[in-house]
Amino acid sequence: MERRRLTRRFYRRDALRLASALLGRILVRITEDGEELAGRIVETEAYLGPLDRAAHTFGGRRSERNASMFLDGGHAYVYFTYGMHHCVNVVADRAETPTACLIRALEPLRGLRRMRRNRSARPLSRPLPERDLCSGPARLCQALEIDRRLDGLDLTRDPRLFLEPGRPPPRHRIVAAPRVGVAYAGEWALAPYRFYVEASPHVSVGRSPGRKQTRAIRR
DNA sequence: ATGACGATTTACT
DNA sequence: GTAAATCGTCATA
Image (cartoon, rainbow, N blue to C red; front, side):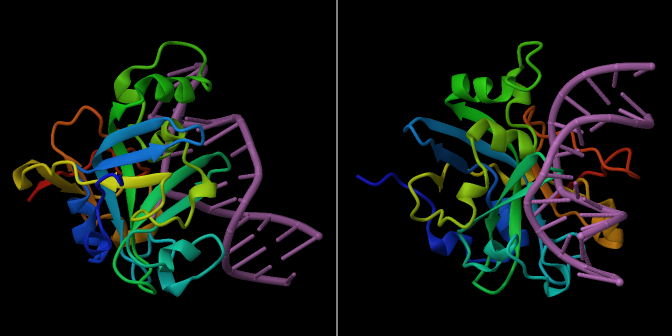
């Protein structure tokens, strides 16, 4: 019996709308050895494609690395950055419309024991608080064992990674703010394309050169 | 072939 | 608060 998951229809909309619609959904990862790791999405960012200076597909750039962004909505785009980190996106809209939503933070729900183990190998110093397990795009990939081997998979079919409907937060609990770590993108860095659940302790800190504080905008 | 640069995280002053 | 870690990718030659 197939587990309930979000369908193609859900993903086939513009990245901005998809980004906020992803909040409250459950990201599920079934590991190689069959263990389930899952968390509720509490923070996302939209990347709008060729026009968006902050997007990997800015100017219509297409390469082996970002090829997955050109797939149909509902595929995964996993990239490697800073020589050591992975980040996972949900591809939005239709094929050849290279837009996507970066998953920035999760509230850990299932498989916490293993997540903590996955995340503790690094510091090997102090015990890791639950709020530090998945509060960041690279942190959650580390916790859920997501890497480039999962790049390009179909979230509507693949048994290794998918989204359950979960329960979206009420609109008044969704905050829009500037995206993190894209200061190089000029004006595009200021646009409120980051979405998070208000007051969630699992949201990433979100630092960025040139911006000490983020301006939160209620919608 | 070469060099600059990250959609980040962690540690440290 | 600042800086180091660390290497695949891409633009330039």
